[in-house]
Structures are given as C-alpha cells and as structure tokens.
Image (cartoon, rainbow, N blue to C red; front, side, top):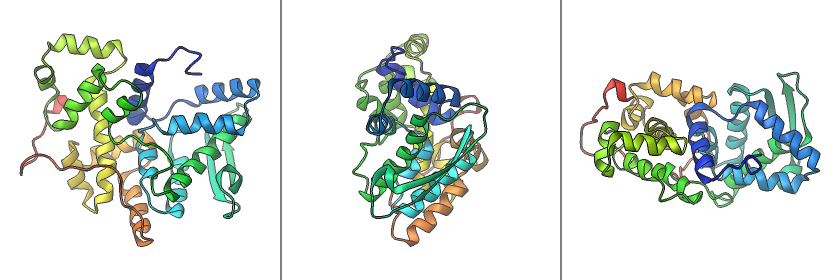
Amino acid sequence: MEAKAGWDADRRFAEAVSQAVDGHLAYGRYHAAGRARASEGIGEEGVKRLVRDFLETDINPAIVFLANLGGVESALRGYNLYNATANLAVRTSVGIKDPRQRGVKRLAAERDLLTRADDPGPCRTATLTVAACVLEHVQSGGAFLSRPLSVSHLAEILGRGYGVGADVARAIEDDWLAPLSLLPRKLGCHKRTLERSLQDVGLTAQSLRRADRMMRATAGLFEADSITNIAADCGFSDAAHMSRSFRAACGLTPTMLVEIIRDDRKLGGAVSRLPYRRPHGLTVRRASFDEL
C-alpha cells in the first residue's frame, strides 16, 4: 500500500514517528491493505517479509517494549495485553500451539472482530506473523530483527540520516529536557525556516520530541526505578502525564508494563537493549508548560 501510494523514506519516517505517539494506523487502512494483498494472491512468506520490514521500523512503545523482553512467556503475555487494551478493531489472543515448531505454524489465535468488515486472510496471517517475529526476536536475544535504538537511528535505517528530521531528532536526543525554542540556534537556522523544513516532510519538532520521550521512557521502565522518577528523567510533567501518553500510544500504562517486566526478570529476562541515559547534571531542568 505504501509503495503504491508513492511513499518515500521521509513519509515512512513521519508515519513511524506519528504511530509512536498516536498509536498504530487505523484498521480501515490495515483492512484495505489486507484486501489488496488478498486480491494479489500474496502467500504467507510474502506477508512475513512485509511484516518484518514494518517491525524493523516500528517505534510504537508496545513494539519497543516487547522487543526488549527476555522471555517468550512474557512477550506473549505483553502481546496479548496490547491486543486487549489498544484501540484496535480486531482483538487477537495468541497462544503457542506447538512449541517444537517455529514461526507462524507454531501459533494459534482467537480473533474477535469489533467491526462489521470482513477479516481478510493476509490480516489474519499478519497478526500471527507479528507475534511470531516478536517471539523469534526474544528467543534470539534481540538478534532476529534490526531494531532502531533511537528516533535518529530510525531515520538512518530509512536512509534519511542526514535529513532535517534526523538533525532535529539528534539535537533533541543530545539534550532532551531543553526547550524546543533552542533548536533553531542549535541547528543554525531561523525558527520559521526550521518549521517549514519539518512541515515539508510531515514532521514537527513536538512530534519528534514526543517520540523520543516515549522511547526513552520505555527503556527506563527496565531500570527498576520508580515511574515518577522515570517520568521526570524523560521530561513528562508528572507520572500521570506519562501514563496518559502511553495509553494514547498503545493502550497500555507504565504500571502494566512494569508488572510484566518484574515477572520477566524473575525468569531471568528483562534486560533492555535500549540505551537509557539520565539528564545532564544533578537537577532536572523542565521545559515550560507550553513546550510539553
């Protein structure tokens, strides 16, 4: 669908940033893609290639979280919890049918349609493939999928490492608690020039910072620190603000995710592969309310 619509790397990057803060794409588009692929006669391997490509550029906190768990049981629990709480038109519950097999064939799923639309075969296969890829990634110790480590790293993966979006993302990552009003000076341009340049590629400085904040907070959940401290370290106004942001992005709250991490840690997993840094200096500098 993206290729046929003429999407370039900038559009894919902007869409990934949007989905990191606003949630995954609406079911209407997912359903349309499934029907289009069904009419083309796509097979399981074709769906798997498309899904894997998607997962390697997906920075939604649910996928980031699942990809950093250490155990299959925990990843499966997290995947099912996401499907039960996110704003999805189809609720899917996945279980392991045959532990001896790998990939989609080892899984069984129950799907509850909350829409009158049909359920195209490629959509059903894609759902199982997402679960299979996540489990394979966890089993491999994080080696199965080439996951982005930051928003700017995602831009590099998509071939836009020197674009305006990547430049702004790197500036934000370097000092993520600084007000956005300082960005033009850091990048050596006027405020309006920067705004227009971002607008041309479907981005805003606010969306890039929110995406960075979500990735940073997701990594922080693995640090066994309090949610209040993580929220402050990552630039949220408070823990409630962080919880609302997670809810909007993936239907899950930090508290739900921490419970999974604790269970995963008991089984010897939950070692995040995402970098997590605390703010520079001893005090947390806050952006103004208008900048949040």
